[in-house]
Image 1 (cartoon, one colour):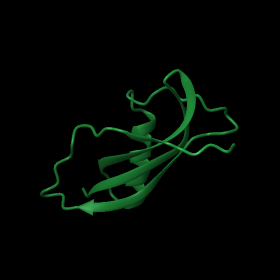
Image 2 (cartoon, rainbow, N blue to C red):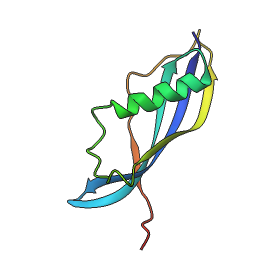
Image 3 (cartoon, rainbow, N blue to C red):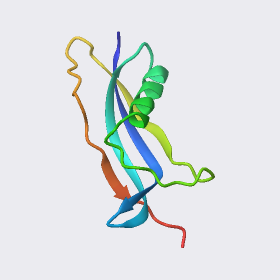
Image 4 (cartoon, one colour):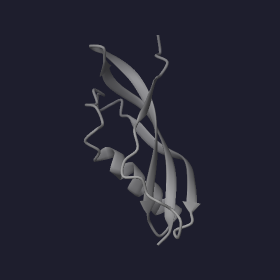
Length: 97
């Protein structure tokens, strides 16, 4: 089965940072085995949604966070080594002031 590296970008995640709610984004590489790039994206996003390391999200239901694939690369399944876990790289997003 093909192996894909999926670079995800999460945006509009309201998280508590230093005791204050802040709008944050993140980057994360996910490695998945799926039959197609489309299924790899779906699987990678689902893994993030289920990840217990994700901080508690404070968004209102009318202002949901978004996760999308910026890049999907098919790797050689014979040589690809899937990392056990990758870390989230959070960054502050601009606020609409």
